[in-house]
Length: 158
Image 1: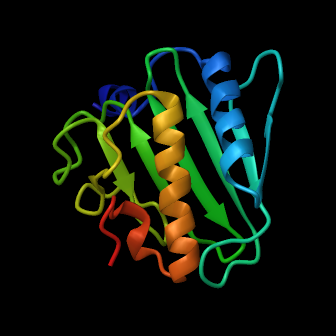
Image 2: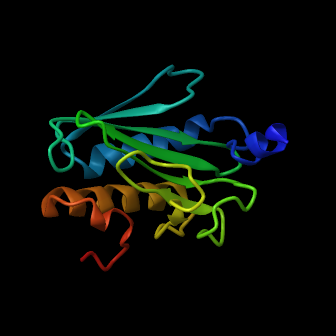
Image 3: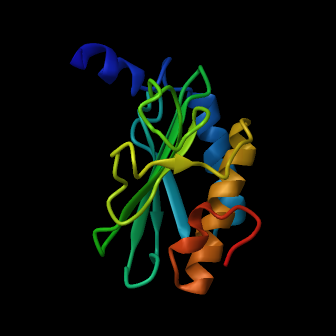
């Protein structure tokens, strides 16, 4: 049974290089603290986004972005304070009991995949430019409030 569950939690499709380039352009336009690069320019597996500062007590951070030709994605934040969180959109086999669709959020501090911890994502758009803008906006609000709570709060941060 481990095989089907692992398949359900896998991004579908090949990595979409044009989408990653589009995401990179949005990041360069919107976020002055970010520098991004593809791990392999011709055949990338991830867009690595280095941040000059992190959330709360972190001195630096990184967001690793994967986007596929099936529009599945992962935006995985990790920082120098060992905090991890993740926004994703991919099949999960219905394992996440609080998630109604494929868009989901793995909260800090460890981006847990425990079915009881994963939440519906406030990001429900699908074009890569809009998802990227939403991730950057949520990160920026959390950065300015020095709190993790706005990261999945959508337009109504506490």
